[in-house]
Length: 346
Image 1 (cartoon, rainbow, N blue to C red):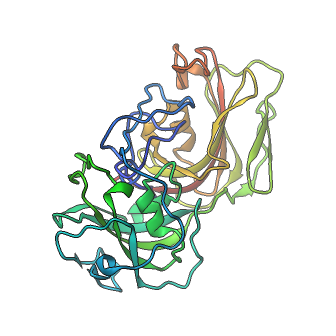
Image 2 (cartoon, rainbow, N blue to C red):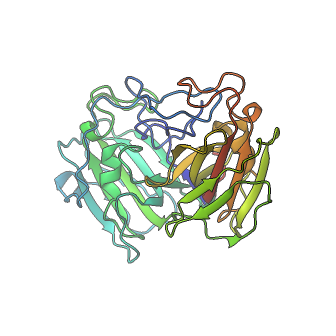
Image 3 (cartoon, rainbow, N blue to C red):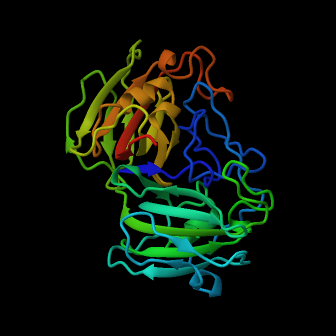
């Protein structure tokens, strides 16, 4: 299945789920920290840095140009292709050339796509990252500029499943004037990005329905899969409770895997939603980068399942609660989690 896109291309850590780890392709880790207003169900939440310059991408199909056309890459290759281009390569606006045209579904903004990719510093020609070239290491990439740097979203929107694309991304839509020390990209450098678009990740769990235990909250789903959670008029359980409301048949999630999910978090105390991915796009993270109860709810489950987890403070925020006070030290959290993809830890 697929990994989350790695940390260095993501604009910031996801508001709820990210703890102290990270996923490498998605985050920009080059300048000052970006914080979020939503609480994170991590015992030790930290914010990822995002580039100073990352304007919103023009998400219409970017045109080919001389720079992207000069990226020499084989059309067919199951393994990582050899890529060559003139150095230095630099652009002021995003360019994209379709090296191989696929015949699958057209990708749109808000989709999460499964891909393999390799990227280079355009100035030096140095390869700075490569992922997803084996079946167990595919990358899941949310096409959402609140999660992913604008140039990488713009490189993939309006592609088709089966495409191989070569793009040259300006610094302003990648790592800005500071660059990325994490992966060795210099300040102001353009990025050369080659990706195979392999699939579009489902947006909701498709497993067979299963009745929850009578002591669990009642879950109803909209046509899009968005849950509504009704908390029972009882005290919450004192220990972690996990049950399936859909049973999938896909790959089993293992500890340390990177999973792609839709989720909703609700407080037992109030019944209020404190965060969710629904209405945005699916989220990817490692099972070890979230609070204990959330990780335990995923490990051992199969892709396509929907899991409901009742997480007491001891498996969540502990005795301190969230820093903004939204989740108190005594609060039990309820999560509804649709498991959409998983990949082995790299």
